[in-house]
Amino acid sequence: MKFFYSTILIVLAFINLSFAQKVLTLQDALSIALKQSYAIKSAELNLINSQKSLDAIKLGLMTSVSMDFNIPSYSRTLSNQFDPITGTQQFFDYGFTTYESRLSFSQPIIFTNGTFTLNGDLWQRTQFSSGQQLPKDYYSNLSLSLYQPLFTFNTLKASLTRAEINLEKAERNYTSSSKDIVYNVTSAFYRLYQARESVEIAHEKVKQTESSYITAQNKFKAGLIAEVEALQLEVDLASSRNDLLNAERDYSEAKNDFKILIGLKLSDSIDVTAKIDYNPVSVNLEEAINYALANRSELKNSEADIELSKLSVDEINSQGSISASISANYGINKDDNQFEDIFHQFDGSRSVTFSVHVPVLDWGSNSRKVEAAEANLTLNKLSYENQKEEIKKEIIEVVNRINSAKARVEALSKSVELAQKSFDISSQRFQSGNITSFELQQMQLRLTDAKTNSLNALIDYKLALADLNRKTLHDFEK
Image (tube, rainbow, N blue to C red; front, side, top):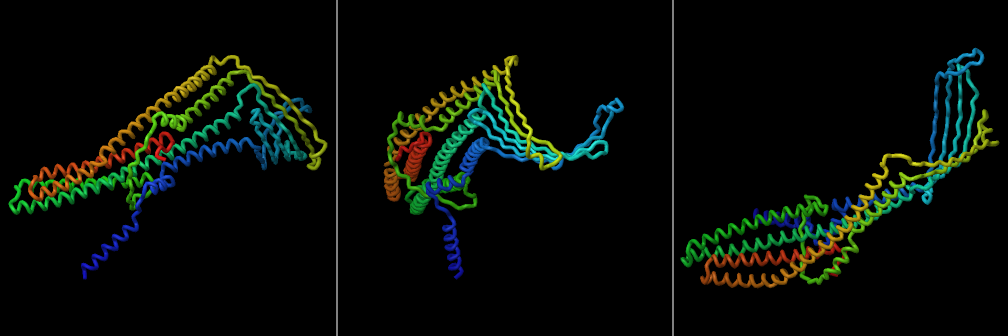
């Protein structure tokens, strides 16, 4: 009865574990990683940062409204003034209390780099001097102002252009990061699957060695083989068990790395399953290079950096050139001791100023800044050309990897079947006494190597194809 209950508990524990464990396919892992991984969250936040920066600049080009209040503004001081009665300078106690409100509308003009401003000002003032209370007065003012730079760099338009370019770069970086995540998860998934299969291969090797060891022990007891052969198989059995333990440890570590990569917790229990088929794909090298040069975000971002550098050259160059500006103001205002009288019979104010700025001597400071900006522009152009060559080299290397892995897969496709058949024959011959344990061990090593090499070649082929898809942004398998 005790044995029965123990068996039930073990079965229940196994069922519990099975339900708790997640068995992931490659698509499952990619789906999780593209939602939960640290890499995708970082890429999303960088994209949001650029999007919000552009939004802020665009909204900054719209009419802004602000209000300011002084409630109150108080001042009291001694003022030195001339007294005509005594004919001498006298100090008078003077002060005031002001309640003021200001309303301002500001509208940038992106096409001209100018600014329209509409200001409204309303205040009440109470003055006192030498202990005497002076009458209150009220003041209203409404003015329209224009500030327009001339013959200079359009900073408003440049800021918008920079933000738009930076957003495009962020969008391309996000796409590139997503592709990198897909490749990294695919690579880690296949490596994890490879570790899992290595455990299965090691486990099968232990079973085969145990069978051979039992046969050898029986033969030794019957006097059919020498003791040294039986001892050799015992050593082989211990070695295969050690290999199994190492494979299980590597698999466990690979699972933890994989869980962190795709955004799962270390406490999550997972396993992977896959059906890796060999589907030969023909890749044209010139076509692959053209796809890469047309689609790679690094090249497009280098082009964007060149445009940003040109903007910087123009902006810095304009700082050393003759510039001008027009400031114009038109307003109506009124001051009176009665509040209701400040809203009619206004007085007018107007002003126009044309200013010219002529750089005379800066000891070559601006020209050095321009040269520095031009050097940076040349560097970006050089980087662009170098990046094109690097991309071509990458594509050539990955296509060579595909062709090499394809040749290995095709060469090893029948090796496992042949090695398994040879091992089965050798096991029968060992049982009948036609070969030694050493010869049996050699056949077993060949079988293990054939399984491992075939699996490695197939996985290398799959990863090389995935790498090509990432580096060209083109799916050659489909």
